[in-house]
Length: 362
Ligand code: GTP
Image (tube, rainbow, N blue to C red; front, top):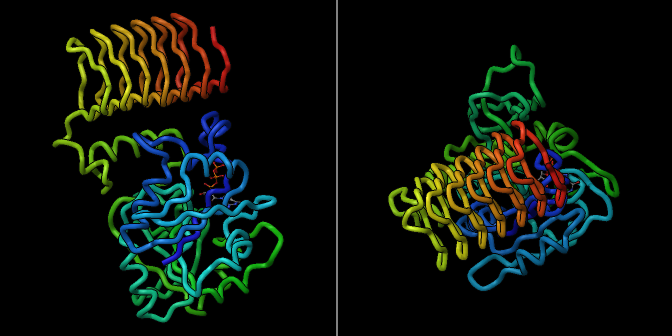
């Protein structure tokens, strides 16, 4: 089975992290985020992946490679300009099979794609959308359908009074090749707004799938996705290595016996945790990162090669690769620090602060 994965967005909501890394290449716990998607696709029989890239295709290719072996083969298509969520399908037309999957590239999920493909085949559908129930549909595209799954209506960003279903478009579709002819060429086209509404009544179906689904596109959700992997709310091969929820410590990581590590926590290989520190609950310490004595890292992710000074406190934050946090600094919840930024000793960052890559504070 073939899959086209949309990875061309700018990821503005995850800035400043996405100023230096494309969103799919950002490390989530222990690997570039998109690897979780590739593993999920492979579990459902996908062996050929086309990454529909916008800017920074090269960075993604460097981090992910071409796949192969027991992993899906991965190809990269670079759009000359952003083509939205349907335009990339048209742009990739020569490389697409008669039936393929199209997916938003920022979802962490274990939904049953095999069931989606099966229903698509049984109904002889033109397109079949994964639908996912959420407690709050605000900000999502809601879908109405008949009992057999045939879609009757799309409601983008619904008014709350208007909603009688909690099933959203989960950004994972099975499509027949003939859908491509309905996508205008050479311009940005939204599949949700322009293409799907026109296919209603012509063989467009949905299937409600239960399981885990999260769009990792905001700092809050990126953090939540990290904890969900460590707490095994989503089915991943990393989660299955976790020993009954204890902290996971990579090869060659040095954790002082006087450090307090509280699960869920992940310490990547080559990281160093000094005495008297508190790491977790809910912490990811990236490769080669150093947490100096008496520092506390809770509810936070440090990407690779960060340095946290003595006695610093990092709470509910994401710290970009190679950033340095001076001794005694306090980083408040919701802070996102760009790659290579430096925070001076004893600085206090307010909740929700965004620090530019290689920016300096204090
Ligand atoms: P924000 O800027 O934070 O909204 O993130 P985003 O740019 O990723 O946008 P959004 O989350 O709405 O995009 C949903 C999915 O479509 C993501 O996987 C994006 O990478 C992808 N995407 C959005 N626009 C384009 C585009 O023009 N081309 C391609 N190839 N993918 C796109």
